[in-house]
Length: 231
Image (cartoon, rainbow, N blue to C red):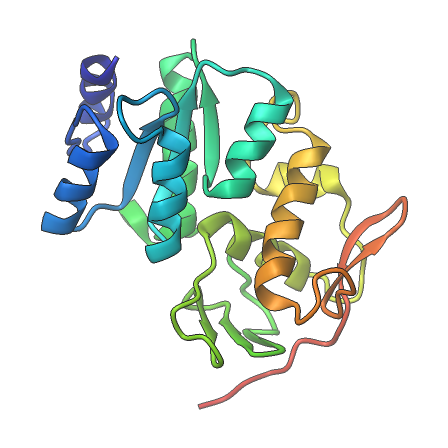
């Protein structure tokens, strides 16, 4: 499987490095910089899920999980813990490359001369949400109280979607569509999980959110006028 995937991504012009375990992957990641990691759930030694969690705690690298577990519950759990996206075996080559490209575009909007379609090109250009300062132009998020905290690509993209129409609810379906997800694969529950992850990072009390609120029957809303930051 690793050899087949390596051939597939090489054909797209990427430079893959295949390893046999999470431990081997950790060693390679310490040696050089990578843009994205494909992680299989079923790894010898440390499981793919645990490895992805450890990786996410120290870096904002793109993570796509590859698994044979096709249930919605498994996909939700993978996204909740670490992954930016999820591919279920068996999959079509075009699906895997499309998901890789989507994550890379969100991480690197200028990749191959393309701008990420979720980038906000109008006011506001920045948000201040509690201790977080969100630069929507350069896709950077800084937590002033905990500088080591980071947002994943999908969490940042969710903020961009909500910031495009502040104080107006955005439906789960719209969020899924703008994230580039196939609604028959990523269900509404996945949006709820992504919102939960984001609230845990930016809200002082995730159970009583002040910034990202739920509008029953309507979706989610960025509940404040984003501050325009200068300098």
